Image (cartoon, rainbow, N blue to C red; front, side):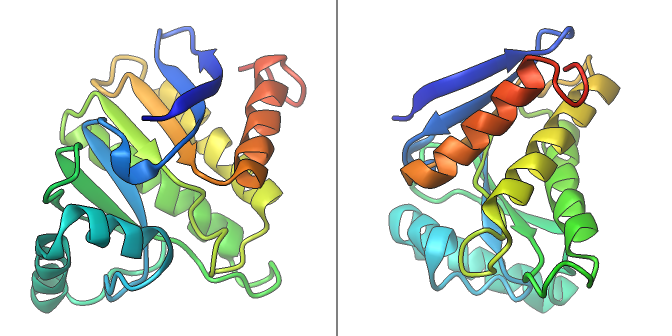
Length: 195
């Protein structure tokens, strides 16, 4: 169970929320996993998802890679959710931070946008997403929040009639939650572009 920290309701009625809690406990239609290209879910968010959801998630991930090859940075793959309370897991491969001059920001935006598009195509109503690439991949949290929140707002503006009605940014650690709270509040009050 997560706690809503701040919420932005778009003109379409779609909701973008910052929540504090355990991503693996979110009862949304899908959650986004911050994955690596080989979908080897060892540590961080990915490891937590497999520990809670069961080995079947890793097995399905390995089968996906065996069939399609590694997931390119910025792209996504979908598996079942095992024992998780959601229905599906969208595995998004974010970039490893290399200082900012290697296309990392574009790749992170693509990972977020492709996750949202995948949820839309699957006709899902709700999606919970972590701070992709901001853990062991080293992407700066403030820039991560700015890019992910902007991607969600852009998606809602472009797809106001989407089945996807609720987008959650769910993180367990207070510092990350605070960065996302500040960014969504900034967008909500219209600084740097009305939301």
